[in-house]
Image 1 (tube, helix red, strand yellow):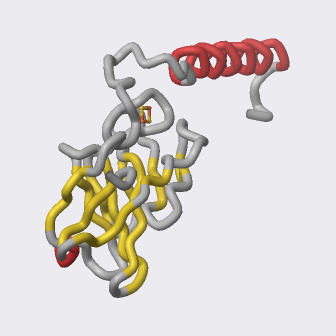
Image 2 (tube, rainbow, N blue to C red):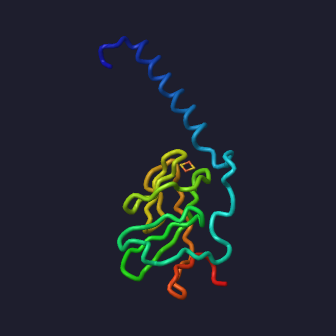
Image 3 (tube, rainbow, N blue to C red):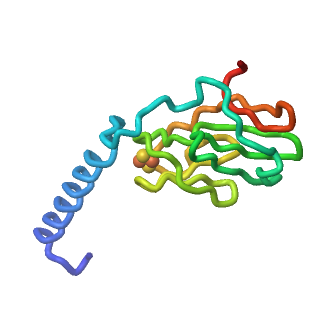
Length: 142
Ligand code: FES
């Protein structure tokens, strides 16, 4: 940009700042206007099926039950709410150990719940998970 006259550089800089401010206002609302802000985690135990469906070293999304379960090591499970902490959309897929939010592109670590890519900054809430009678069960004990 060094070839531009000073007045032109100032105009461009101002436009870039105005654009960034506008985007920030549109993208950073925590109020859900999408109707997704329901209870983020199961409030009662939910059956998820066979623990074998969760790959060792990977994770599985249970969209209907609104949870994700990861398996960091054989027989060990961690579960998180599948509801994005940005504006409440439901994650749509898990790739390796990253969960994806389709609404604004946030990504979450499926082993810790941590937000890896914004706009979300808050981790996914952890959900209790256990194996009962050969089935994975997420949510509070009955
Ligand atoms: S709701 Fe905005 S990134 Fe998930």
